[in-house]
Image 1 (cartoon, one colour):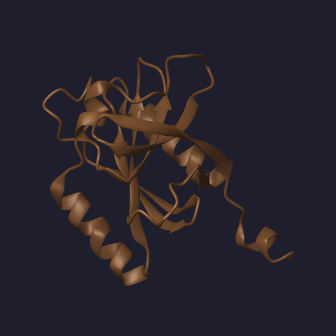
Image 2 (cartoon, rainbow, N blue to C red; image 1 turned 180 degrees about the horizontal axis):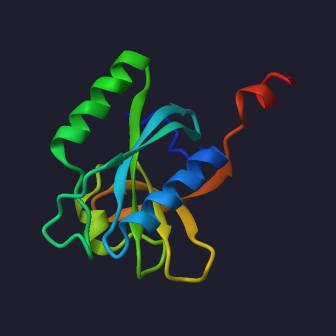
Image 3 (cartoon, rainbow, N blue to C red; image 1 turned 180 degrees about the vertical axis):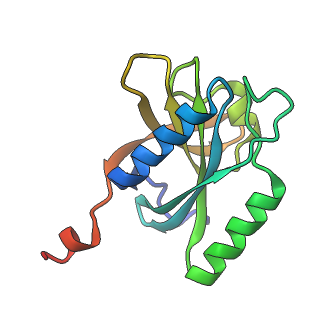
Length: 155
C-alpha cells in the first residue's frame, strides 16, 4: 500500500459470511477460531468475497490465535488462482470484546483488515472490523453488508 492509496474506512462482508464466522467461532469455543479474508481493496473499502477457516496453532489457543502456515499458503494459492488478494484475517474472542488486544496488534500485518467475532457479550455475537495501520495502531472500519450479485445487478 503506497502513500497515495487511501486507507479503507469500510469493510463489506456478506450476510452468509457473517453467519459462517459466527458458526466457526461457536464451534471452536472455548478456543479462539481464526482464518483469512479473501477479496479486494477498492479505494476506501475492503470487499470480502470469501472467508476461510484455518487451524489455530497458537500455543495457548484459549487466549490467542495463529493461522497454521499450511493453511495460509493454501489460501494464498487460492487467491492467486481467483485473481483476489488476502485482505485480512479474522478471529474470535470467546470471552472478550470485539476489539483488538495488544497481542492481536503486535501480531497483525500492517494494512490488513481484522474482523473480531466476540461471543461473550450477549446471546448475539458481535462482529467488528479494524484496519491495522502499523504494529501499534489501528482504526475501526465500518462493517457493512456486501451486496449479493443479484442485488448488484438489479435481478
